[in-house]
Image (cartoon, rainbow, N blue to C red; front, side, top):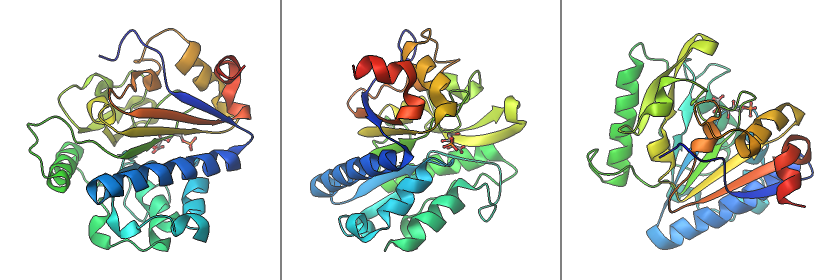
Length: 258
Ligand code: 6PG
């Protein structure tokens, strides 16, 4: 269940956004390597927004690029905006341009959310079918286990496209859903809690003073995932790591790293 809890996980309080990227890149390499050794491949969900840009760039630099066998990767997304894939706000386009076009992956292993479609519910269902196919499971089974899910944190506390007080927060029987976001007058496609909470690793990347209130709410605010969606992230059998820079860390960072 997602009630009665606050955000949890290891907090890594870092000097600045660049150090957030370095720490997240190191952890990404660790989890990907573990996955390849255990299962012969790695399956990740990439995030959008601006914070992961530094991580994506860093992963293409020789030091990191060489540590990962990219051809063993399956690349999904945690959410997508209601725009075509070549749109400047597309999460797919951002990850493609900064990361995937600059490492040696096969096109067949890049799984885009088609959030530009008119029928976003059908697009979300198709994404679930794609996930089931990739993991070789039926959609009647529990959600598949991503090796790494990358998440940002919105100033309003949203994660992926699980925005405060939106319907997808209450979904218990879907892996991916179309989520109306009235505060942005749009609908987006997003992974759901049941899928996120099966992950082997969830990495939050948070940087900048604009995020301080959202970090404080996540760790120290009232327990209310409908208002503070990051509080609903509790993978039963996975690690959660918060890579937070000093500007964003606020009370949570100070208390937990005193
Ligand atoms: C999106 C995201 C979203 C993002 C946060 C943080 O599509 O917008 O996936 O959840 O991670 O809004 O965004 P910034 O990193 O830009 O602050």
